[in-house]
Image (cartoon, rainbow over all chains, first blue to last red; front, side, top):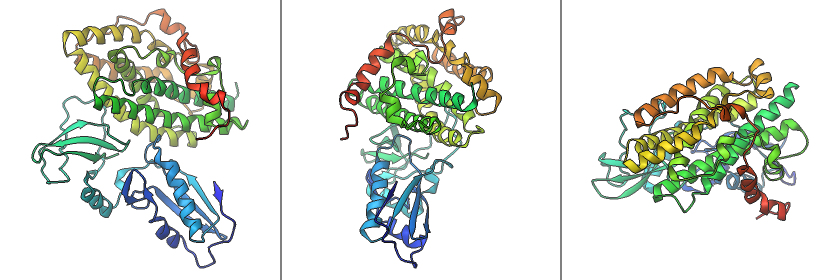
Length: 173
Length: 253
């Protein structure tokens, strides 16, 4: 996707400037996080006045990706930077391990339990120990999983036995 | 068959399996036995349809005839669909949906793991990403198979009957098409014989825990089919899925 009238961001624009602007683009499903701290923006380069942004989808079917791509282009264009090309890269696949510590803390404050480190995943394992997810509201570890799928592809549903609050967890992925 | 045509055929198969099964799962939206399961089945449908979009998109790029994922999904006839018959069977009761899902998830998981190491970079990128999602699907369906099989008398009977029905369609998963034979030789796709044995050991482990019993052998109906052969059920599924796009070509909303 290439957009913009070719007005150009000027010779002094750097990839760092672009990334700073992209921090204004939020994930529409988790509006407390921007797409840079989510790890969705993999790379930004400025080539002969043209801006190329590489993004990686969180989940294959995530409906937010289209909105995010449009947000990248419109945010850069509105601030006079362009033309913009947004490219999708799939390898290496997105992981929650790319999420910054700041981002995890913002999630918790927002009421979503942040993801722990991604562990080796064995799908068929009946005697596994399930690591308890701490309640984002009261901090208790006495919680239970209600469902490994939630309101969006990236979240699961849990219940806190201590403060009796249902809550969501951003799945380690 | 040249290697490009083989790759397009194979990618269409990967996309179509996921598109058709994703559609079947989406039929549960608003109808699943409990709210959590409604959300889970539709989440899995969303992942599968997302994966289908990626595989079909790559197939269209390589084919080079200007067909994108939507054109391939909405404007091919049932005879052109390359999915396995297992995924197009009607959703049946909840037990059938879960048992069929488990048999396919185990197949998809091992296939995608192997394809993540494919010699084709575009294919390996999609497979690596999809394998991570499919691991969650497999965990979910495997745990449900055990819960239903080792649950009440009613759930056991229904799950066993679902397994008896779905099982005979699994034979087709491992009969190589000409395209799969070409691609296995060049290291783009795995050999299906090796895949069948890892799939079978995952299936055996779950079925053992579920107290269900596998039918003795694969009857000839399963082996008589292969990828791209269809039952009468695909046509009605596509009629529903494609009707809007065909009534209003190029519509956006």
